[in-house]
Image 1: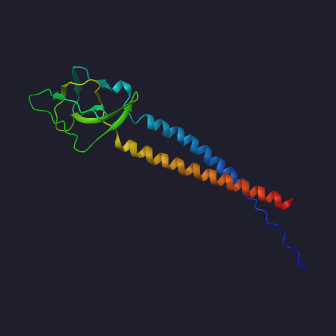
Image 2 (image 1 turned 180 degrees about the vertical axis):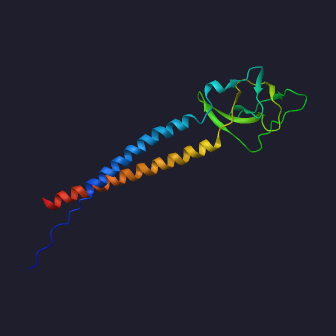
Length: 177
């Protein structure tokens, strides 16, 4: 009759659980940082100007602001520039949307920008509830999304490492008991 070999102990199990716990701590810290990045994606309240009647918007050289309307609103607006030249308000495929105080806004026109004169532009809309704000930073949005995916991956690896480490540690205890 042969004697079975002694059970194999896996001394790395507690270390794996500790590494997994460390990854979870890193994921939470990065998650807080990414959360702040999400809050910076929308314009600050101080950068938002409500359009009421004839609203004057000052554009610096090369600056672009966007006229936003509540989602599904088709407003009637007239935008005049600082010169007799009719301003180019075409978005050219760039569309932006974000929520403010529970209202979802969509971009409908640009004010200023490349090739447009600096100065005072007048925005006059028949409807109420429109706002003027800076364009959203698409590069920032992409970076935040990739950072969120990284946080999820690190957190997932941390959970798997903790679970595997604890299960193997428990199996080691049962084999030696």
